[in-house]
Image 1 (cartoon, rainbow, N blue to C red):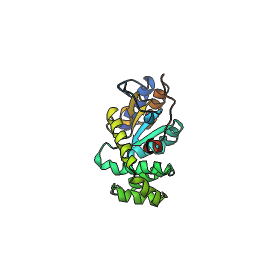
Image 2: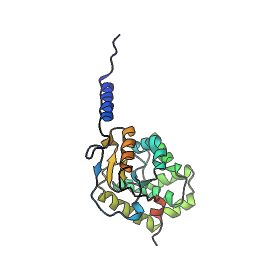
Image 3: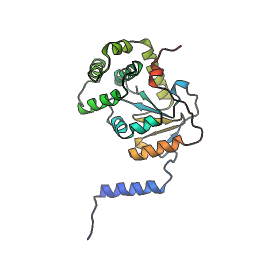
Image 4: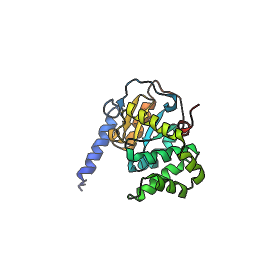
Length: 217
């Protein structure tokens, strides 16, 4: 009896076999080495992940790798690569500032993914967050704090320094860059991230986005 598989499936199987036969972390293939630049303490973490509420790939990462990333003490930062992303980034930091349930970030992503025509402007996003359980009064106060704008500027500068070009993107130990485009699949992404974490020179420093959004001393 002969079995016939679609060409695409055969290609995926071949890709998986090639992956298994190769070193899973090859520079300039599965990851990029970043220039040796000083990184402010507020951004030092085993993994820094750049995210955006309106990114379906970011949601997929949260659904499949979120628990593991939390175990690795990931620092999630809202991306401001585009001006239109700033309202979502402000909401992210404001929710961190008021110590909202961390699960609300994923819930917002899920709600926006289910309504692709939803507005990404600030007021509708705030209303969505409140609908999902955020404290409206505290959120409105946090969203207008001057430090929030300073935090966004620092994140934007960091994104430029690390040459982040899209989301979701991952910086490991301030030394390596990777994303799902480089690794091919989420399973491979996890393996690459783990291998990069295990490389010599890991910084055992953890910080939260709430601390970044907090007023400077």
